Every structure is written in C-alpha cells, then in structure tokens.
Image 1 (tube, chains in turn yellow, cyan, purple, green):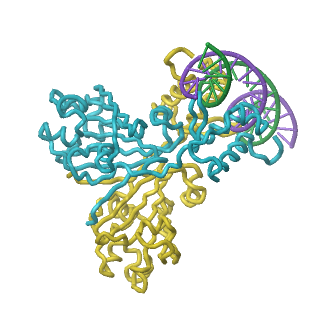
Image 2 (cartoon, rainbow over the protein chains, first blue to last red):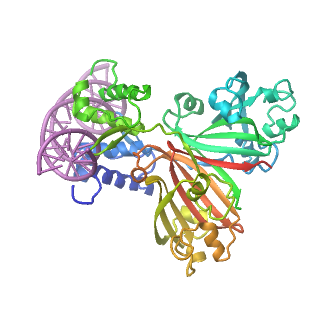
Image 3 (tube, each protein chain N blue to C red):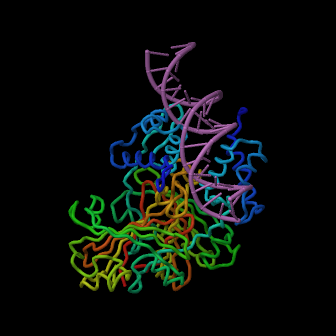
Length: 250
Length: 250
DNA sequence: TCGAATTTGTGCGTATGTATC
DNA sequence: GGATACATACGCACAAATTCG
C-alpha cells in the first residue's frame, strides 16, 4: 500500500457510502455483489467483504444471505421530549410531545412495589433496599409503539397518599409535577442524562425493532427542593427520534 | 462445521469474553496473541483475527499494533455537555466540562469557507449555497480524543469582522457567546437535539474506536434575538460519555 | 418440482507492511 | 537490529439461503 494512503477496504467503503448518502443508491437498492465489487474496484475478495462489513456496522446497508446487500431506509428522525417544562402536565416526554405537536398518544402502564436496587437508590438518594413504586410504561402514537420507560418513586414520599399509584385515582396519568403538588411537594428541577447503546432484545421487540438497533436512554430525575422525588429511564429508538432541548443562555 | 454449532470465531470470542467479564483478565491485561490463540484453540489465523475483531467491536479490548491486544477499562460513562449555560465561555460542551469538572482539555481545529448545504442552511435559516465558515474540532482530554465536532457560522454575520475565524484573533477559542458579543450579537438561546447512531469509519478512527460503535450526535444551534448565529454537530462516543442537562421546571 | 446459478457468510493458508519492544 | 504482534491483503473453498428458469 503506497505511502499515506488509507486502506483499500476503507476507500471502497467510502466510495459506496458516498453513493448512498448522495442518493445515487436510494433505500432498497441492491449493492453490487462481492464479486462485482471485486471487479469494479480491482480489489480482492477480502477487501470487498471488509468494505461491506464497514457499511453494515455503520447501519447503512443490510446483508441478506443468498440475496444481496441492500441499502437500508434512513428515516428522518422526529423530535421528542421537547423540554423546557413550560407548564404543568408536561411530566413525561410523551405528554409533552402530545401537547407540543398535537400527536395523539396512548400508553399502557403497570405498577408494582419493589426494593430499590443500588443504582436506583443512588439516583433517589435513598438507602438501597428501601421500598419504591416501580411503574413500567409503553407509549404508543397512533397505535405504533414509540418508546418505553420505567419510573421509580420512593414510597417514603407517596406511600399511603392518593398519588401512590401513578396511573390511578383522581390524578392518575396526570404527570409527576401535578401529582407531587397534590401532596405538597413542589417539583422545581429536573436532570436528564442522555446515553445511547444497542437496544436489548426485550426492548426492541416491545418497540417493534430488531436487537442491535441503537436506542437512546434518558435518565430523568425530578427534584422538589433539592430532593429527588421520581427517577425514570426512558428508552427511545434512535433511528426514529431525537431528543430536543431548548435552553436560555446565561 | 458440525450441525447446530455457532461459528468458530464466535466461540473463541465468547470464551475470551467470559474471561474478561469474569475478571480473570482484568483491564490492561494483554490477550493471547493471534498466534497463541491459533494454537490454544486449534483454529486458523483468520478465526483468531475475527474473534479479536468481535471483542474490539464490542469495545472490550483494544488492539495496539506491534504490541498486543489489551483489555480496556470498564468505561463508567462520564458526564459531558452539562448544560444550563450558566456563564460566558461555556460555549462548547468541552469548555463546559473543562470548567465544571476541572478536566484539562486541548483541541485542534481547522477552518474553511464553504457553501451551506441544504441541511445546514435550514438550521441557520439562510439560503442554501450561501457562504459559511466551517470549523472542524477534535477535542482531547489528557491526550485522549474524546469528541469531535463541526460548526458552521454564516459569513453574512461574521465576514470582515475580527471574529470571522473562531480560533484566531484576540477572541480565538473563546466560545461562541463571547465572540458574538464582540460584534454586538447577544446570544440568548440555544437548542440541542440529541440523536444517536452507529459511528462512521472516519469518526471512529479519529475518536479511537472502531466503525459501528454507537455515537451520540448533538445538533446545537445558538440564537441571538431569534436568529441562528452558529450551529454545530458534536459527535460523542456513547460508551464513554453521557450528555447531561439540568433544567428548572416551570 | 427440481435444479442450476448467484450471493452472502464463514473459514483456511499465506504474504507483506509496519509499529512496538 | 531483530523478534514479536497487529493490520491489511490476496486467493481459495464450502455451506446455506435465495432466485429463477
């Protein structure tokens, strides 16, 4: 390989990538077969294979054994979890999207008491093993599952109050801010930490994707007077959505 | 290959992975060399190579040419891009981290003029093809590359002013807010849209990873009086970092 | 329905360049 | 400089899946 040049398989991958992002090879187009690549670029079988592997790892194409290698759809991600928390009832990212963009949303939930695991305990600043209310959500937009989340609330705060179960009673489904207000806890701060990783098989089957697709995980914690009152992990498929924040400067 | 068995390279990779997560091979341990693997598992050179590639793609190990393949530190994700934009000079996520966590950071940059592509034009609310200043950054912390970004500023705002080049002149490297203040543009708002996807080969080689590792992309736009003055894509490896936001409620 | 051709995916052996020790 | 080790590259073989006549 001549001096200062990039490896052949990256050069081939780069050329094919260009044609994909340029639109010369729209989604569902079949890439040249390994043999064709070998001929067209004058490279070996190994180089053609490695080039395809790079594009597959990047999620741009998908190999179908016996058939070919195809350009995948790259859907325009929609915004979700638009923040600013400008009003009551904006408690979950989903309810926000609902109000912000007029999307009809529905959700299912399931609550149960459990002992706080160490990670949850640290986020809620309680002792590990203390009782918490865990609620799992699956949010849908027009019937399609779009994200799921798990939230935890310390029972030392909500136990034996009307808002102990997030989705039941007069304030059921109203969001953390309103529910906590009902028991004289003024939610005034929230932290969100956004991470990303390959989706687990469980999550992706619930969200209608395939394992290995990238998901974003928003670890959100609500505070009332410096004290954590709820924390949640929101799992969002990254190929369809973005998490948007709007902040003042200074 | 016998019936119902997984590929040899996955079997070898699985065995090595077990030893790593079990703690039998703690961080900084050197893996058996390709030749040793070939002998110990009775497989070919290719299989040993593919097995190492799997572990590298999973981020568990890191190959150092001429030296060996080493178990990587288990990366507890650190916070980055802590927001709130509480003060001047907090213009880039990196500079924030610098001030927030006392991390010594350095960066390289390279600026050039170009025509705005349609996507950039929309974000800056200018006409496609209008001239912009593009600046590419690679940020390092203690020598290690941690994130990279590309920013665009309309030359209709900064052209023929002392702050046209972000990293030169008296305000070079001072951040968007201060630089724009110097030409009487008061930056008062910022939007950040967080997405995630598999990293491209180019990005990951710059960031010390391999293609396919998950990255987060923060699309940030600064506004002055409702008008976009700078937009940037910040690429952050998701296995090592999280993007943290702290927001008031209401 | 069968079978041939194509294509991906896996696997083997080898050779060479280059970084590190 | 020499030995070691990774990284790239070439050429080949075969199984499984798919496509198509």
